[in-house]
Structures are given as structure tokens and as C-alpha cells.
Figure (tube, rainbow, N blue to C red):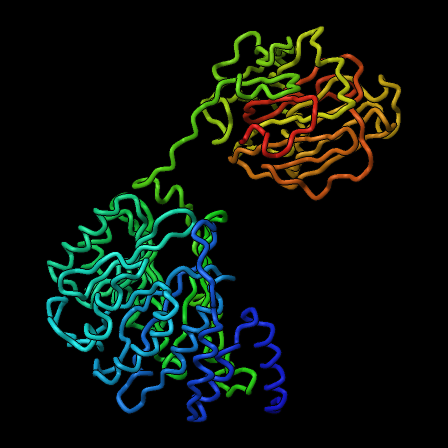
Length: 611
């Protein structure tokens, strides 16, 4: 075994590096509480500094909902010890900005006996949040009130301490049921409104009616339901939990997440509601662990760009004591990393909320709005391809269909959500034997001889199907130019390669490979692997000196720093969906292609077709 000195050194390092420099307050407060020493001046100073002037960012698409389960053993008659709860609350203040903590939900059983002195103590602890104006909710568990009663029980020490009067005037407080035991709270995060429904230990018929009225009054707001009892273990609801599901959750699609305590160990269930959507039901409770759970908090980190909720469980009180050295149990409980305590929940938020708050589809934009200064060619597929595809720029760079092996071109209304035209051409290329069809600029098109020595921007939308096969579909061109390097007198590298091609590798990596006017060999820009069945926007931008490849508006890592001026031309056509080798068609795209635009200058990302 390592010595206590070794433990202390390791724990100090962990605390110093971990949890992002927290400990300003809790290191002193936790140690003092354990020693039985009161430090009110230190507590007040720490609270004043923690989170001072910090407020959640309501527009950030990353935010955190904090959850605190059963704290009853910390408020049990003569055994009251508020330090762990105070440490957790100060932690939330300290991390408010970095984690964008928007709200805290307590899941009930604040106290062991529901006694006045117990509620006095925990009420004082929550004053830490009250003084900073932080939004939070509480609810009664079976130990906080007479467990045989429902929300019509009348007066109680719980109601005196945490009734509606405590929350009135707070920005996040929405309202309460007439009995005072059920409340709802609203906060803004990720640019929208969210609702926390905090329900009593047992709902009466009036309680159910009130909850339904609250949801109905906020028809487009996603709801997190909090209550003391619902999930009893993995994939299993308690009898009362089943009643909550049947009478409230199932028929209200806005409820996408439920949180409860009461039982242990922690567990999860997922059920589909009447609308066919998943509801995630989580049980979190640590009262059976060291120091009555040490006021552990569960942090739900929402990320609407990644479509995920990352969940972690930590004890700020133990973290704050680490510099003084931890005992054996504290070392195990400082942060929980088991599958039930640290996990991720995948949620496509836009899709999940579409049933009650659909994101309106972006309307199609007329071609005239895409004709920015310097537009050399612009092709779109508003309808099925038949004969000639007109160049919307008016410059005469029209396209004609070229078939190979009896192949054809299809059409689909499928399109990138930010694509100007609401349609795409469907290519059915296959390598061996070579079949399919592609598009080619007409003879004499001005684009055929253009060299773009002052710069250019080439944009295209594409989507590959689920059965895309690198053995038959790799290296097809999205946009390419006929004519070989050898024909242009540039014999560096492979002289049979085309003078320019934006192709997709066998790993679905976009590659811009071309011969600039100022060099003999081929210059390449490489992107990362693109997903199947997903629309992707590509842009190649040259400012007259250097070329940058963008995927979905983001520059890729493999953009060469070497100078690249213009695009070599031998006067031959441009292709959509085709790739040539030795000036013969060698591969045809398998997938859908949306709008394609070529501009004779460098465009900023803000001017791409996605904007």
C-alpha cells in the first residue's frame, strides 16, 4: 500500500488539475466542517467570489442541467451536516460560466424526518443559490412529508421552507399548483425555452390535471419531468412510476427526459411514448454510499450540435477536501465512472422535438439570388434532367447528358437543408463494367477555356447512399475538368491525370487535385471521410495565391501552403459526376448531386450557397 503522504500528494495533484480549478471555497469549508470548526466569514467570502457576475449563456448550444438526489442522511435529526450540500451548491456557482450551468433540480428526500430543524438547515444551505439568483427546483420525497398522503395534504414544514413563496419573483419560476407541492420552472438555453416540471411524491387527480394544464400552456416547450419515484431499476418502473407513465408521460410527447431518486443503485430505462418517440427515464440516488452520498451531483451536459447529453457524477465536497488528503472511501467516491453514472444519451433534438415544435424547412431561393459578382456558372436541378441543363448565370455554360453503357440520370426532391434549389440529380455510376451517365459542358462554353488566374470558388452539394462501395464507386468526380496534364505540357506526376478534379477517394475523402498555372505537378487538398446518407457541402476557394478546401464551411487540415495560381486548361469541357483518365471517362458518381456554382473570385464562407 502507498503511504498516506503518497495519497495526499496524488490527491492534491488530482484536485488541482481536475474539475477545472474548483476548490476555492470547498477546500476550506469541507475540511473545517469535518473538524467541527465553523468558518462563517470564509464561507461568506467564498460564496461572494464564487460565480460572481456570471450568468448562463442562453444562446449557447452547450449547457448543463445539474441534478441533486436524496440528501436525507445529511439532514437527520441530531446528525445534520450541511457542508456537503453547501459544497455542491458553491461548485455550481464556481462552474456556472465554464459549464454553462442553467438550472439545478433536487429530486426529493431533502430531509430524513421532515422535521422543522432539518428543513431549517437545508433551507439555509439553499440560500447560497437564492442570494446569487440561481434557478433551481425542489420537490417533496416520502421522507419530507407524511408518505401516505398525496399533494392535497395541506401544511407541512416542507411547504414552509420550499413552498411557492420561496420562488416567487425568480426569473425561472413559472408557477405552482394550488396546493403548493407541484411547481414548474422555465429557463432559456440553446436559444429556446425549456421547462422543468417538479412533481410531488404522490400526485392527486388535481395534481395530474395541473401538470397537464402546464404542458398544454407551453405547447412547443420540451419538458424535463422530475419526481421522487419513477424508475426502480434498469428498464423497470415502480408501480407508481407506471401510473405516472400511463397518466402523464406517455401521452405528452414534450416530456423527453424524466429524473427521479428514491431507489438505488442508479439505473436507466428507455420507453417509446404514444407518439413513437423515445423517453429517457433516469434513476439517480447515492444515499446508500459513503457519507450519505456526500451530496453528489449529476451533471447533464447538453450539446445540441453533437445531438448528445453527456452525463457525469461528482462529489464537489470530496473534491474540495482532496488537498488535505482523503480516506479510502473518499478516494472511491470523488467521482463515479461506472456505466450507470457516467454515460452519454444520443438525442437528435430537432427530430425528437419535431412533433410539437418542428423546425420549419428553409424555403427554396431563386437562382437570381445566387448570382453573386463573378459568377461564371451556376447549375441547379429543380426538376428532372431532360436534354440540356441551363447555366443559370446566363454565361452559356450549359450542360448536356452523356450516357455510358446504357446508364441514365435520375432526379430526387431530396436536398441539403441549406441548398438553394430543392432537388438533386441522381447518378448511378458503376465501375466494372463502366455504366452510368454524367453531365458535360457544351462545346464552346466560355468555362472550357477559363483559367481563373485571379482566383475562384467551386461549390457543390452531394450525398452518398448507404450501399456506396469503394470497390465500384471510389474516385468518381463531383466536379472535374477534361484534358490531361500531358496535353497541357505539364508532365510532372502522372501526365494522364486530368488537369483538375474534385473527387471522392475510396475512404470518401474529398480531394481537389489539379495543376495550377504556376507549377508542373499536381497540387492536392484533402478532406476527411464524409458520412453516408448525409448531405455534404464542399467548397474549393483560391484567392489567386493559395487554395483552401472547405467541408461544410470548415477548412480541412490538409490544405497545402504552396502557392497555386489558377487552373490549367486545354480548352476541354467540365464534367459533373464524371472523372477521366487519359482523357477517357473512367468513373461515374454514385450518389446525388445538388447545386453547383463556380465563381471567378475567392468567396468568404459567409457567401457560400449555404448562407
